[in-house]
Each structure stands twice: as structure tokens, then as C-alpha cells.
Length: 288
Figure 1 (tube, rainbow, N blue to C red):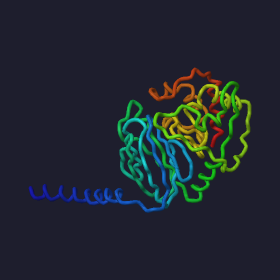
Figure 2 (cartoon, rainbow, N blue to C red):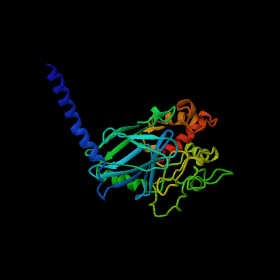
Figure 3 (cartoon, rainbow, N blue to C red):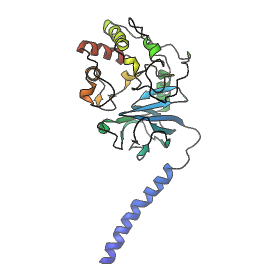
Figure 4 (cartoon, one colour):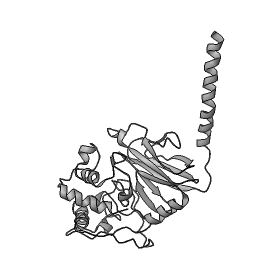
């Protein structure tokens, strides 16, 4: 009996250890030369995704092509975080001033959740992200759409234009590298109907100082912005790093009461009225 008590647990441990060790070695092998290069930057409490070869920047929703290797170079701007995409890989800690790498390949299309796996402050549990694995044609269509210049907002009275402010003339984090001049190679965007609410939101976005922290340029976006890139926020399924579903009402509520919804984030309550928040939400939802 004592021999069985020893042998059976040993066999169970061996059955667990073999695939685990194999997986560890696989994740530490050198990735193929080809593949999609993505920079992942952790912030309290959201994720920034940059595609340096494609000149695309987005936030909290990572688009990848099925059947192609994805190579991630990861770091943070503040504290230690942990990038955890459970469908594809184990947790990988990310650090300030130090690069961590991870690579994987999606085998089928889908929409997969991910989460910060390292306690990083009071909103750690609300630092989620999603991975949208797309068929190659759909991924290329997404890239083409992101590289299309989005709606170019007009200047509000007494302010710089949103396009100028979001192209780099704004508050940036210490140590951030200046962005290169924006190229004019992007294709013309489809016109967005500018109803009165949209036009009001366009002006408020500049007048209320949103441009100090957020860029509306997905293509050739500035680096080092304090807040998430909002150039395609209207197409995302979630807001505030997985905290709220992306609806008109939730976006307006998030704009008006960020400290109520996610206390401790850098985004302040600006004292907006419900009507003002709704107008800014309508303006942002047009950016897809």
C-alpha cells in the first residue's frame, strides 16, 4: 500500500510535468523571423498596443491575424504588470525600463479575454484587454481602415485644433520619445455625418482639455500620451479596459464620472453636464 501511495502520485506529477516543461521551453524558443511585431505597454490601468511596422496605435483591444506568429515586446510606464492571455500563453511579467518578450500564434478566429496578472494598484482587477484573432483578409482590412485618416476635428474657439493637439503638442509622460512628423500618406477617410451633437462634441473635446491626454490619430500616433488612444474607440467592444460595454450611455457616463466608475485613474471628473458628456460621446463614437 505504501508503495502505491508513492508511485501513483509520482506518475500523476510526471504526467503534469512533461507537458508543462515542454510548454516552458516552447515559449522561450526564438520566434520565426516573419510575423507581426507589436509593442505592449502597461499603464495604470489599461494596455497600449503599437504596431511599429504598420504605424498603428490602439488601446485595450489587440488585433492579430490567424495563422501568423505574433511577437510582443513589452514594458510599462509605471509599476510592474503582468500580461496574461490565457488562451494563448501563460502570464509574462512586464517591468519599467526593461523589455520582456512573448510570442504566440492564434490557430482560429475569435475574441479572447486577457487580464493583468500582477497586483498593480486599486484597479488591478479592472485592467483587462481582449485579443481579436481575425482571418488574414479581415486583419488586412482592419489595418487598411486604421491607416485611413479619421475625421479631422475643427478647432474650438480659443484653442488649438484637435488634429494639431493630438499630433504631439500635448502633455506627455516624462522620458517619452517625441513622435515623428505625421505622414500624409494615409488614404482619405469616409466622410462622417456631422450633426449638431457631433459638432458640439468636437468642440468640447478640445475646449475641455481632452486633447491634453488623448490622441485621435491611430496612424502615426504620438508616443507618450497619458491616456489611451481614442482614434478607433467607436469600434471597440469595451470601455475603460474591460470595465464597461461600449454603448452610448456607458461612454457618456465614463466621460462624465470616471472617478466614480474607476476610482484612482488619471482621468479627472471635468464637471461636465449630461448633455456635454453625451455630445463628446457622440463625437468619439464616430471614430471607428
